[in-house]
Image 1 (cartoon, rainbow, N blue to C red):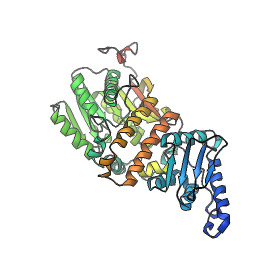
Image 2: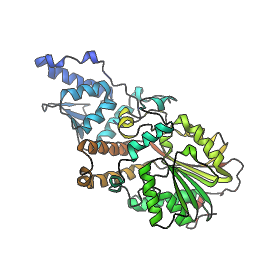
Image 3: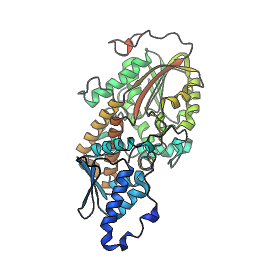
Image 4: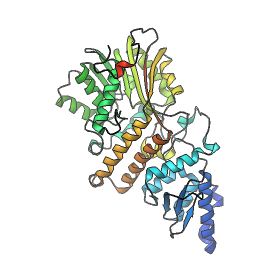
Length: 425
């Protein structure tokens, strides 16, 4: 399951082996195993249907969601390592969900949150747990390639027209995804208080939409860094097509290689892939890059308490990823003694963004099936649904943090520049 919690659900293997030889007693043991599993995750209000059609409920509450387990091996795998095997067995079709993936996952996560064993204190070593590969220079390259270099054609089917793969900003909940992504870029530019002729460093630029928006709308010059070859190739092509080559330079390189100085430093959706072991390095990069009166902004998925991501999420979706707490983010700012000016949490905006992505993903299934197999499709459906559920229940946050040098007094008195029609220089 896609949730930043450690697993304490494992049942010792010696207690569940040998079931194939128990004849008529098997169903009773199956009921006991399911009951043990449900109790271990807080007795959520869901119904489990076994491969022979028999149903086993959780609490006495009437279930609106359920899980169908198609074979006994899948049940045993759930009990031995649910946070890895649930995702794999759902992806392979050995587990089906009734009542909708998002409601199912919210039901399970909320039940787990009622248990003291899941309300753990912060764990500074959480980032390293379950990680298949940490974020060294070579490790980061492989981690990013795993997720982002699987084909621009795939992402174009369900992202917005500008290919933004980060949280949008919905001034109104009914806004379209395209309008919300433009509003996100505008909000970031206003928070940075950009002025014509300034220089901007964009660390981890994705497909490059923000860099192009800043150059076109605010007349700044941008150096945008990214280690995804597919994304950089796309970004360069778009910059040429839009006549922005002289204002925007896309550099296929790691953030640790950033050189030169800038008036504004921005990173949107990259910190999740840096890892706490390297926050100090990123902080030093910002310190040597940002001018004395410069302003920076970090936009990242986060969490309230240091917990590892699930092993399935790290193995199948985002190896090397970790959403920081606000406390952990301060490691970025300490090397340069930066002052935090503003913190905003856009958690529910990210839930809505993911809802748009999932709806577009489902709408384009026929074309996606021409590119990938059913296991891939089900894994990505689970990933997007899990994101919606995690943001809805508050297991994940979306932080935008604005900062500057401690002695910088060229600051606005209010936050009006973030919403004023023409900004507040």
